[in-house]
Length: 325
Image (cartoon, rainbow, N blue to C red):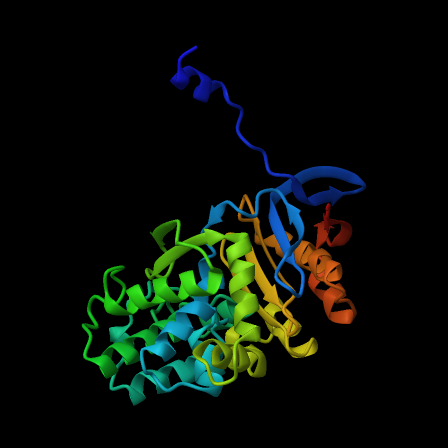
């Protein structure tokens, strides 16, 4: 048998089930993926699937992007720094602060290279459309990050028209920060939904990066990002989002989700987790996150709230999405 024939005959690796879709007592579907839980010393406490395989962390990379912006010299703190690491919901207080960040840097919404979009939060999107709103660059959930990227480019005299080019000085710095924080070489560089370069690392590397941020020395770029996100979680996500609930109700926790069902969390003592649902189904995020948090010893009303994912039949609750590991 030739090597090419042998390769073709090798069955694909099938990830284990992280969550089940249960309707009327019947398991009608599964969400597969990989997950890692790190102990306080950084060792792997639980591995499900293949957490060493590279993934695109999507917006879970944003704390590292924000740290690169600080390292490049932009003096951000508080709500502004939290918003630079955000996937915001498009709530008014968030959009108002993005406008202020742009204006203070001598920029306008026209300078943003985010794709026009509606607010990420469905409730905000409905009210925005009802008021006559249309898709705009500002309302795209990454506009805070892009405003900060543009501002630091202006500060350093870097070209603002090409700030999303992977070869741009800012994006090269982001790559170095990702590699330092994760302890890995970036496995792939892609383009995120907002147009920014996207650095691929493993789930172990992602959990390690979050762990490094909460354990970083006070005053470092990494610790400043972690502290701002934890102090102002409503700017990182929104008032109706699990990242906000978790950081608000479990003090010291750093949490950031990413598109395609990625999640990373670190506790202040260095315990951490990261996972990705293979099919990108965000409806599985809550149940998987809640189960993983309990593996870390975190429980209580906020975990119950995050883990609840009911299925409806008509106007009646007839089932749930539940963790299966």
